[in-house]
Amino acid sequence: MIRPLERLARLLKRVPWLLPATSFAAGWLGFVMVQRGADLARLIAMLALLGWPWLLVEPWVRRRLEKRKAHMGNFVVNFVSQSLQQEMLFFSLPLLIGATQRDAGQIAFTGLVGAAALVSTIDPLYERYVATRAARRLLFHAYCSWIAALVVLPMVLLLPLERALPISLAATAAWLVLTLPLSLYSLRSSRGKVAWVGGVILVPLLLWVLRGQVPAAGFTVTEARITQSIEDLTPGMPVRTLVPGDLERGVIAFAAIRAPAGLAQEVVFEWRHNGERERIVEQIHGGVAGGGFRTYSRKQRFPEDVVGLWIVDVLTPQGQLLKRLRFRVVDTWNTI
Image (cartoon, rainbow, N blue to C red; front, top):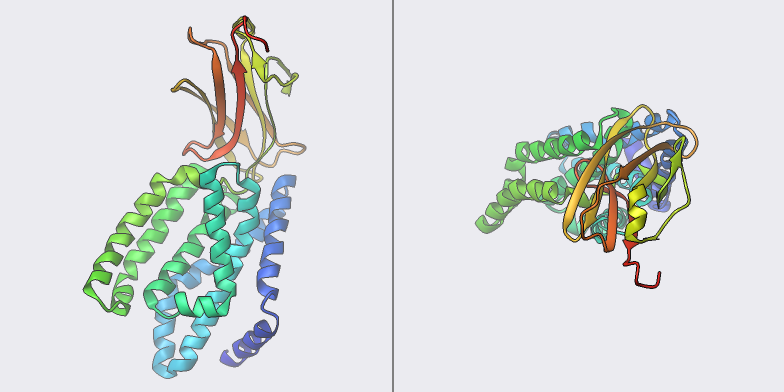
């Protein structure tokens, strides 16, 4: 078992780009399959969850191997962990990129995933900042597995995003608690141990609070517009500027959304103006051929003060942005 791993490790050292490039290509293939509504995307996505079983057993495998041959035990476990981390991160990255909107939070989140993917491929950085301490190794592996779960659970288990996110976060947090003794043992100072315990508790809570900044991987809005007419789910001409009199016809926010085949998912149209919000919930279904599942929200009741910028966000139930639409209402006396 060890000798084949040694040969594989030597191969990857000669061509270090091979595994990340293969995983990245598989991620784009999974993204394309999702866009086409193909069930093959589910099979491709299952590969990204290979790290979960290893995540559960890695600390104990390491300890058993170290008892037999310390140096070789570290080599085998570090090699397998680093390879799986690369596979999970580079597979997930294209699906996250495809879902990232022009939103600072989502761009930052995807950028952090990209940075972690680079760290996993640069051996000097990985060995210095990740592999040297058990606490860092366990945290980094937990992060990689969480990212993969966010992307894969809706595609493989057909879990709606509002269930996939808390389940993946709770599972990762529970595993960090179970491995807490190993992490604390690797930390030298009491201050570091206290900070680690606090981080295990607070970081999952912080991620939950910031869940709206996570891109909805696997979901793509192929078409969206503000209009005032729709027939057979085909929207009319887009509008950007209206006068108060136009609102008597109502305003429609239309979106065509591609999602993993077989998935039923709620989406929220949130209308915002001058600090006021109105949320309208619709349901979409994945795997629809063509441009995706077509849905819309029609607003016919407006407040007295309608002048100004209106924003319609298409969101998941937990606040992940899928698309942002805008239109402006101007006074009739102004030049449009």
